[in-house]
Image (cartoon, rainbow, N blue to C red; front, side, top):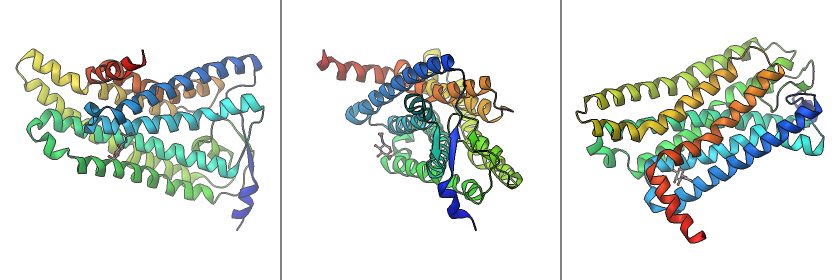
Length: 306
Ligand SMILES: *[C@@H]1O[C@H](CO)[C@@H](O)[C@H](O)[C@H]1NC(C)=O
């Protein structure tokens, strides 16, 4: 048993590139994106918490999504920002595992919240008369708690397997944060079991179940929208789910391109960086710019500041 030796392991996060000029550009861009992401999500969170017009299931889900987005962008961007300032690229085993754990949970969690939201949209459009009965406070709290719990539980099995690895061929992680695939590449233990495990879990638990449920909800939603006779009615129904659909498509595209990319060259790492940054950056913007309710809440709450 060499588990305890693990605690003393120090990894090096290689980051995106060795080129110092490119590093300055990447640092400035990431800092800018990070600050906009925090500001956007914080504003959204404050609106959702303090404006009682936004105390509906959809915005409660979105408030939780904003928390996930802020944590996610902090996890994925902190190494780039910190290592540029301190010139220190090392990270301890524990910190690395924690990063991997939190990132895995948050990603799973984000998929689950979006799935719960597609159910919310399904009820709103296909069962409008029962909406307040079905999506009551209790269901909403239950769904939210289930998403958080399941999100944090589902990463335990693959991380448990990873934890038994004691041998590494190199300590340099060819990525910008501790993610499971780049770390698996370093191990000289037999990773085939973990590989199978990881992809099975992605396929069955994390990826396809939320994907299929969201897909089914949207089939019902679209069928229902098509049945509406008046054009304004159609447009109104579509309008209430268009932001959600945009965010769902954005998240699935970025996840697919991130985990199905074959190798980690500088350019693929760069696109992975902007992929992981795009979702938390754009989520609050998509919801704020497209929704009349959010715009109205912004106007109500920002006027006293003038
Ligand atoms: C997150 O979800 C919980 C449970 O439904 C809710 O009580 C809380 O207000 C939500 N958080 C935000 C910031 O909306």
